[in-house]
Image 1 (cartoon, rainbow, N blue to C red):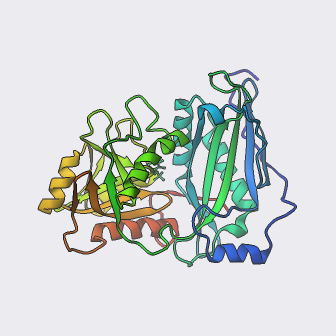
Image 2 (cartoon, helix red, strand yellow):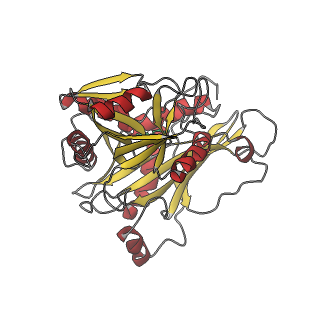
Image 3 (tube, protein in one colour):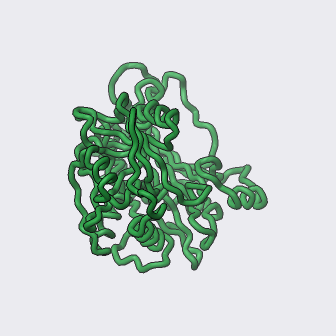
Length: 372
Ligand SMILES: *Cc1c(COP(=O)(O)O)cnc(C)c1O
């Protein structure tokens, strides 16, 4: 095949598991799925080798990977991932939300981590192949905020300790039934500003969805937890003056005069699909969406003066999470000042998004893609 030829779309062979969960076992898991604890009966695997491209795409039994201790990913962290959900609608059909956006983001992440590109078509087909085989694992409609969380990922599986982009790469998708992310119901989180740790820096991998960013966020998260907070909020590493995001969620502010403000993408912030969807929905709700640099001082002052009336974090897993108090070394501020726990805009945007995802509102944006 000449390098310029468009590769044929991958076709996923199916080898069904010889030891699937029984109906009773699956029902017990689906009754209380939690998050990221249980996995379906199958997974997707595909291999890329330099020269040959992607091949051997299959749906096979979920189980341990064959990986030599010298596999490059274990040493140099050449790895990227995605996260999206499959939602059951009232008529039994199963849909995902803007999977093409996740596919394109995975291509951008791949470029940054010097991994091979997977086409949007192959990405979406890999989800469809897995969810079709494991469709009984998609929680029933009307059970609240339950879904099947899909985790596509790609890593350097070549057994080689030299430092260069791997010549053998594995792509996989696993799936995990998910209940509401916050088991105790929606309640505001307390955030910690870490002044010792950053998650990303200029020219680094902050805009790519890679495991390394999460590894570098953990010490900051721990520091936050030690100070009684739920999560850390990271500032730009160059000046420590501007708000970036949480370890795995983007941030939004609602101002008293009706603006919906989020940090602009500077190359060190991950471009969330939820974030970009909320910017669209905000316009339709008559809010004035604004992407710009936001000084941390603006948060502190706005919370004190009442100029900031709501703050929320967003991402696929938890959808929208209200933010309450902000703490840092030697201080704290709380914009709620005795007002409601969850603001009107936070609640409305959250409902809008969930109504679209679960097929309860018309999908006027064309955001849904049917999987089954
Ligand atoms: C995945 C992720 C998000 C949220 O992205 P969504 O596409 O909305 O799920 C935000 N920040 C970071 C660092 C992430 O890895």
